[in-house]
Image 1 (tube, rainbow, N blue to C red):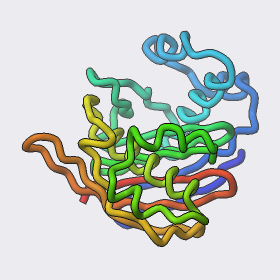
Image 2: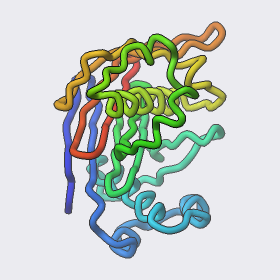
Image 3: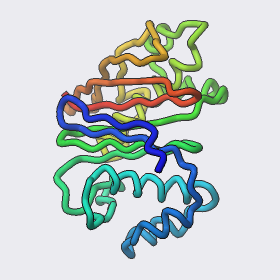
Length: 213
């Protein structure tokens, strides 16, 4: 079983990454999905079905349970694990899926490095974030910022957040492939939440996760 990466974090959070090498049938044989989960899976096509199934399998694997708890969605579409008080977040891209779980609000994002992210940078990057980009690591930094904003969006979990207007990332000018950390916050009206952010490059992938302070 290709558990690619696994660690327990300081505040009891658990993070896992699965390298997806198995066919869809491998996951279907090991996952007994609820009616609600089958309904979620039904409209998903192609390789994204395998990614979706792999994320549910990884969540169960990390839970340590013998009997699997269903991965359901609340009224806003935010996933939660049936029978658990822990917050969860999931992400998948190409052949990797990432899951994080813990007692605080949190989010995770994993992305395969692609040049086309440059085309949408103006939609999610604030001026001070753009100013921090370095020529040699511009592509990687753009993915870190995107991943950080995705992670905070997932942690918030109630939609209606504008990546540029409402999610602020403390500028990350000294990008390091081996990993680094920073801070970010969500500010929307009277609401504010501050997060610790962590990133790491894993080959052609960028992993970012955020945990509320």
